[in-house]
Length: 325
Image 1 (cartoon, helix red, strand yellow):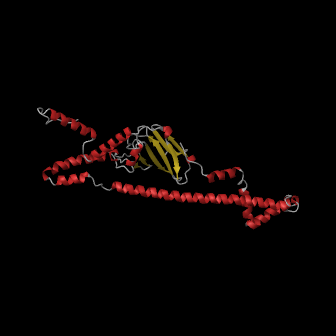
Image 2 (cartoon, rainbow, N blue to C red):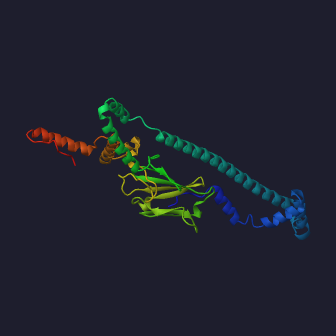
Image 3 (spheres, helix red, strand yellow):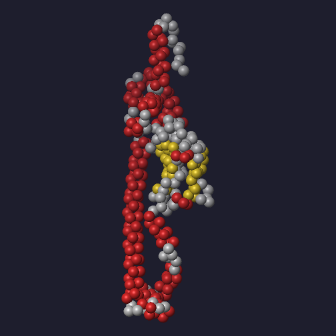
């Protein structure tokens, strides 16, 4: 659903075109080129009025003819002033949009650089503890290797909770996914063919093969999804998730995936959630941090506590081979 609006300057140009303002542009351009300048053009035009019309003879003392010329001059002088103001406003908006775009790109690059830097986490302290115990070093190294390989297999580290492909970039919150598809500069919404369905997405130019086309990772609320063209160079699509409690690992099935365990929700958004939803989100965040640290999740900890309590109540039983499933 396109929410973009036609600029006022474009509407004004269309209205003037509908009035026939440019109807004889080709003819006038030819006459002006042959006349050789503005002054000769006016001289030729008034010569035509003098010889072929009653512009002068029907005007009496000439005041009516002069008033007609003055009125026409005033009319087009006002139109020129309005068009020039619109042009300056468009240019100012273009510069402001360009500065905003550059700022967004710089911020994303900074976040991407920060995300690629190795964070100082609990594992660093744990590694030091392992080094201080030589006898346990081989086993610890083997244990550390397995989770690392497992993490690599889960996908790339998220960038702004999303990722970048060769055709688009994307970000997400728990409730929606935003997709940015680059298009040639100067692209207008009317040139595009965008189709957002519950399980599929297609973006491209009318009459051409689509730029983006495929099955969505999960269902979306098609009627609530929006799209627009930003700065005439990028299609921005907002997809509302059906399941507002799930992090997407990709936008389209088969595209590069991210590791959803490394997604970092904005804490400031938690205050906007109702009590039950906020509790669920906080639990998800806690479990993600525990997994990253190699510690038990809330469910696993609950099982361990239950087993410990049961063991305390039954000291006569042997739990040496007990395992938590």
